[in-house]
Amino acid sequence: MHRIKAVAAFGLVTLGCAAASAFADAIPPSPDESGLVRNPPAWSNVAPVAPAPAAGNTVDDFFARYDTNHDGVISWQEAQQDADLAAAFTSADANNDGVLTRAEFQDAAMIAYKERRSAGG
Ligand SMILES: [Ca+2]
Ligand SMILES: [Ca+2]
Image (cartoon, rainbow, N blue to C red):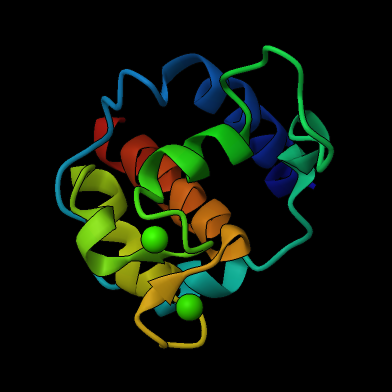
């Protein structure tokens, strides 16, 4: 229950703060966490699949921003643009193919957020 609520809150916080990218430091390996975040992405509600007119802060926008070569996935190298994304990269790469799909990118953002909450207190 509370997890759903946290996910919803995460969407709001992400929309507000992800641009500032004030996430926590390093993220320790957490296989349990990566299992937890494999839920239906509640905040996909705020990220319509269809082109969002003048939104600028949807998951798709963030994904596109990091996917600098526009190949549809975020490579390890591209993840280095954001320290928190880089830290969450391994945990979020569910199939261990070395790149993050859009779904895995959402997981990465969620992992980073949860780590920030637990670290920041
Ligand atoms: Ca890419
Ligand atoms: Ca992957």
